[in-house]
Image (cartoon, rainbow, N blue to C red):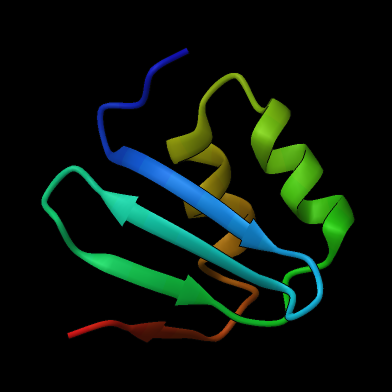
Amino acid sequence: MPSSVISKYYYKPELRILTIVYISGAVYDYLDVPQEVFDEFRSAYSKGVYLNTEIKPRFAFNKRE
């Protein structure tokens, strides 16, 4: 299902970085995200809800400039 918040996402398993590109254009790298969490995110019906409840509260991030 398309997200109203997330434009694109990428995962680098060797670095455990989940990159989220928001509709607004903001880009965030979520750090040390395990493969299992990415798999759950990818298969979630609502990626925005999963992001807000399971990823944002648990993982450090860097906002790209």
